[in-house]
Image (cartoon, rainbow, N blue to C red; front, side, top):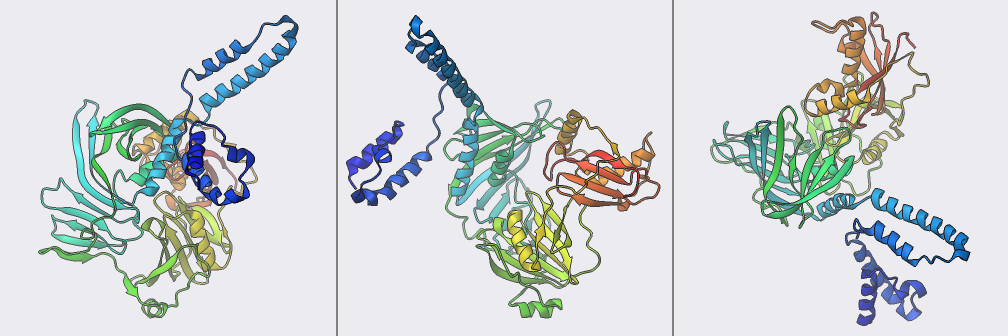
Length: 536
């Protein structure tokens, strides 16, 4: 490779010129250099996009006007050129103001930075401030976390001693100084890690409705970019992103219930790994151990059969990159657990199987699908995803935080049949009675639920119970609801639309139709949009 040629190639890219190699192609003797040129181009693309400044549209207009010559005999031609120029300017100005701007790059930068993180260590402080400006420290913790999902959390504000929660992938434990006890817990699934976990904050920003750069500030000695983030159907909050690492440093919520919550890293550093001594399980002197994880590891499927009383089933197909790394049995429930690893805790998958103990009753908040033509309960949330069904006298469940598509591969491998996740509710007919909803009212209700009020609005069965009960008692309800929760069955649910059957003869509504109008995920409230007065 000629170093001068490579240097000129880089210079051309940096000033926005098209290198001659792109125009004429590479000569046969230069074909060995093609891979290097391509690598340089890809590295160049990692540089932040250079956007025109606010005066760019006016400068463009002035430049075009300066080039026009007022020649009368060419008036028609210039009229045409002016029209084309105006259209071009409009297109450029529209692109400048409405195409994704630097804020979208901020989200990308955070996601890109998080992929490169091996581990990090910091002190997280969470405080609350009331409307009078009075601030109280809620908690102060020292945190170590790595990309494999391992973590070690030490509470720093515990007077009685060192309170610790840790997960090393094989064991999770909590140290309680007050009780002088170590509690052993299941390492997986582990729905909750800790407040202000970087990965979760970046995912929330990526899903937000808008992300806007507000200002540049200094947080605990580090220069940071302040973002205003408006989640879909939620209240805006602020996030400060470290300019050096492109990772979140501080978050301040909206004022809710007269309280504003701030979570911040008062110190933060990237590290190669969590110290091994922190991830080594040990019972301190003077402490007792209480094992709440009632699993017994089995060395083989045959040993699992002896413990559980049936031969467990292995999936005929698994998602690429996943391997079986542990077999365990819950003896009290005669349940076999197969743990599959995809390289980290975030990608781990658990397959459970046990003999059926009755008809499958899906959660009222689950999507209703099928596995090999058998009714299936499908949970799809950020912290927990699962597919559960019954077949041939056995109940199976595939769960984890991997994508629903990945879980589907395992479910299909276990059942040998197709997995159907509905994308629409099969209701060819419109509700007999339509119920109009005020979207602004529903948006306020969503914000109220986000703040911790009326969590029942996240449950379509509960919403249907309240609605059907108010039809019977429009003046209000005193005491128990006239329609029991147990008499409501969610017959269809695709996560956005749902249908509830009211199994109470005195109910005016026989079927209630619901929809997530504000936010179409597991945090969105349900709204009644219609009902039937007659049975189908």
